[in-house]
Each structure stands twice: as structure tokens, then as C-alpha cells.
Amino acid sequence: MTEKKELSPEIKEYLRKEFSQEWRKKLRKSLSVKERMKISRQKMPEREPEERNKDFNEVNLGLNEKLAKREARRCLDCANPQCVLGCPVGIDIPTFIKLIEIGDFVQSVRKMKETNSLPAICGRVCPQEIQCEDVCTMKKATGVPVAIGNLERFVSDYERINGEVFIPQIPPSTGYKVAVIGAGPAGLTVAGELARKGHKVTIFEALHVAGGVLIYGIPEFRLPKDILQSEVEYLKKLGAELKINFIVGLTATIEDLKNDGYDVFFIGTGAGLPNWMRIPGENLVGVYSANEYLTRVNLMKAYAFPEYDTPVYLGRRAAVIGGGNVAMDSVRIAQRLGAEQATIVYRRSRVEMPARTEEVKHAEEEGIEFHFLTAPIRYIGDEKGQVKAMECIRMELGEPDSSGRRRPIPIEGSEFTMEVDLVVVAIGQSPNPLIPKTTPQLKVGKWGNVEVDWDTMATNMEGVYAGGDIIRGGATVILAMGDARIAAAEIDKYLNNKKVRRKKT
Image (cartoon, rainbow, N blue to C red; front, side, top):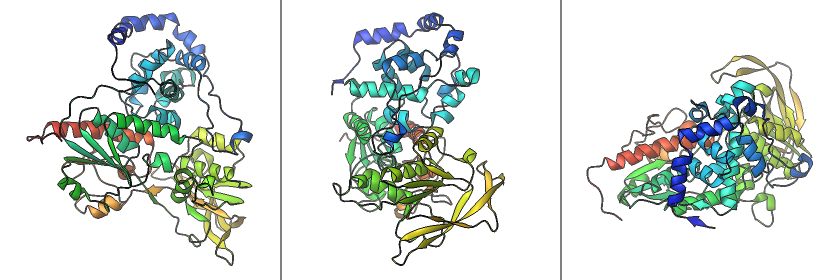
């Protein structure tokens, strides 16, 4: 892969001149607002459902150059771009899209990477439809936003495929040591931001590979692992060190790492503790938490057993409990592993489902069944302790609860039984409890989340920050990255304000 260490003087001059306000006005005039609004949203090519539901290859195929440039022409280059405000990491969306419009894909991805270290990932898994695209001016005008996420994916893939990965010039070492605990999206983002500022960053990861939920939670057909690893390698080239199989809290505590000379800490250990319904039969063989099921299949490659020696139960009739993205991933995996019937069981209606619209659409196209307004009340086993059926109850919707969604209420006397031999419970997860348990002075909330000052991501312990699912519970990748950018800025400020600078290591 070709690495370019710095921008040439010619490119710097190009950016200074070509992206002046005067130049952008000329670009806007080259195609009127009315003409831009007439361009329809370019559909991303994807594999046919009857083909893709049998393997783990990626479903979406990405835009080509022609489609990307045409989609970019839909951007109105607004004077007050709300899309930037809708992005948790504050990408300069109009500029990166304008660069696509003129065909300068390399500069486009470099513009994006000024605030987003993981664009190939965000372009695939982030819910742009409820963030940047939701407030897009084109959506307000026509009802159809610019496909910001698809364009983000396009230029990041272009950079990787064409060997145009740019490594910015790193300033001299500050001499400060930063410990990042957890190599998920929050930890990787903090590491990239601080490495670029010259701090010595070490990422401590409990698993044998970096990525966190990106690698154990998201299936190959949505996020190929080689793309994730290319993003991790990019961070290493920025100077971040990765220590795998290192469990902070067991291998060493935060206090131990302080004694080893680390000046500041970021906790990004995620939400790896599965939630259960606590109904009879949850201990039967064939009843999985989504965390275990996805980890076995995605990280430990159980889908390739016996080539990889981690087995997973292959159900004939699979039921996944829940309505979020994790549930969609789980049920689509079960089908790909050979389930004759793969069903989502969700206690609310389709309107209330928190899963991305695209993921629900893909699941429906692939033949997944949906049982709405239904909830399990017990699992039934056979004489060998294997789940064979699930007793459910019908629900109706009442008044909205604290989430803003209508509360599901059981309908008395509506119980019925479903035949199942595999159940995956995907009803959410809680923050990883290990760091709080081994750091008793760290303040945590009612649900085990690390408490922070949301303006700085600082915990109650001096020099200790946190972000992502460890403070939020289960949330999105881009929200974790947004937390991380705030934390990184505050950590850099904290280190720069220290009165006594340590000797450079």
C-alpha cells in the first residue's frame, strides 16, 4: 500500500485556491439549485436477496465513480449546513461532497479524516438517516436527502483500494503516556486523535484482536473484517501501540498502569453484559444471548466450523427476540447458517422498531419472518434440556413510555406456542462491569454506567475519561466516536496544562 507522508506544495496551493468561497460560488452556479433538486438519489447497488442470504459476503456493493459524482451533484452546498450539526463527529460534509463532485476523491477522504478516523466503518454501519441525512436541506426540500453515508463509504473505499492512504506528519513526542482501555470505536477514535498530537498512546484490548463491537458484534455481510483491520492498521501507522489479550482490571488495574507511568486514561470498554428477560427456560441448550451468539459467529468464525474450532448451534427454527440492529444481525446470521425458518419476535409494532430502515428492508427481502406485538413468557425444553418451543403472549400498545415509544401491554388469554430449536435474546446490553469493580473510587450510575461530565467526558477521577457504551449503554458507533473526540480534545488540554512535564520516553 502506498503511503503519502505529506501534502505536496502543489496540492496545498490547489486547496487554498480552489476551495475559496469564490470558487465554490462558481461551482454552485454551474448547476442551479433547481437542476440539483431534479437529480434523483442514486441507488447503491446490492446483491440479490436469494443469493446473499446464503453466504457472509457483503450485501451492499457501494457506489461507482459515476454514481458517486452524480449523487454529489445533489448537494446544495448550503450556507448554513445543518448536516454538519447532525454529525456527532462534525465532518465538513459539504466540502467532502464538493470534492467528490469534481472528482477529487483523494482530497475528499482526507477532508473527512480531519474529524473521522474510521470513515469506511461509519459509511457502512452508522444511522445517517437519523443524523446528518435527517437534517439535510435536500430532504427538507424534496423529501429525499443526499446519500451522505454512501458517499462517505465510496471515498474511504477509493482511498484503500487505490493505495492512497495518507499518513499525516506527526509532531515531536510530548512525552506523555495515554492508556486507552478498549479497542472499540471510542477507544480507536481517541487513540487516533491523540497519536496525531504527538502523545504516546497504548490501546489495551481484552480480546485477541482489535475492534470491539465492530468485530464481534457486526457480521461480515455488513462490515467485512479486512476493512476494519485496515482502519486499525492506519491507527498503528499514526504511532498508536496495541496490546491485545490484556484485560485491564485483571491483567493490571488502572492503579497499576499509573505506577507504570501512564499520565491519563480513557475508558472505552463498551457494553458487553447481555440483558435477559428473566423468564423460565433461559438456561436451556439453544438459548443464546446475542452477545455470545454474535461473538461465536463473527469473531470466532463459527460459521466456518470445523475449519475454525468454535461451534455454534445450527437451528432449524430460529427465533430472535428484539427489534434493534443486533436482532436484525442475529436473525440474518441464523438464516445464513441454514435455518429453514428465521423469525423476529418483537413486543412492539414495526413503527417502534429501533433497527435501521435499511437493515429491516434487507431482512424482509431475504425472507425473514416478523412477529410483531409478541413477547415470549417461557421457553420449553425436551428431555435432553434442549429448547423445543417458546410460549408467547400477544401485546397491544398503550401510552408512550420514557423512550417515547408506546408501551407494550400483554393481552390476557392470548398465549400461544411457537416451535423453536434456537433462540437468540437481543434485548440490549449493559456496560461492562469489570473496570468499575476493580476501581472502586470510580463513580458509576444506577445501571452500571460510568458517570462523566458530558461536556468533557471526564469522570470523577482526575485524569480518567470515558466514552461510548460504557457511559451510554448500547448506542451507536458514531455516538461513541463523538464522545471520543470530545474526550480526546479534553485529554490533550489536560496534558498541555500539566505543570511538570515528564521526561520523554
